[in-house]
Image (cartoon, rainbow, N blue to C red):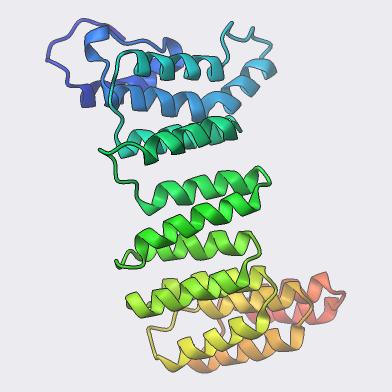
Length: 291
């Protein structure tokens, strides 16, 4: 790669080039360094650290004298020293990167700085991301606090993805009442389609709340939306995994009545359930039905 230019580069152009440069050089000419290029390099250091470090060790190569974390910290200092203003995207990248380094203290400093920045209005996604990092670090209460902030930023709009992410993250933290609370907000503030039902049913099943998941499934069927067989298959798989094989059989029958013929994944989930719970003969019969 050469520094000889045939066209003038903008900082956005350089950001794309930097994704490659970061892997071999990690440097740009000073005049091209802007918020876009810094953001790309910050992201690169955060996300490639673990993989490249592992690969270097596996190949017997010497590690760089500076770890990616040290390079990352040096780059953050350079941004501060140059007085470069951060935008919401760069704050998001910083939070993700500190998460990749398992540096909760660093992430918290970014959150404090972001919230005191009058030029930035953080969206729900940044707090959702911070919540995931707290959860993975074993800091559940702080994770919930972040989700509450995220929730406060979405209740007045109709961003379906935001509701799905909150439901998934609350379920990962074992917060069933909060899962259902966001589900009610979703139904109140937007039109719930198949993806929304898939999201909440799978989240409730992760919490082993079969009863509520079944009620929401019945609600979905009663709405006569386009019949997405993936939704009953979520229940069939959960029943089969939990040895609730009669319920799995009943659900397969419901699918057949709706679509007129057995669905391959419905049969497969049921057959695996039989096999995993010692009913080999039934498993073979079901496989034969499938084929």
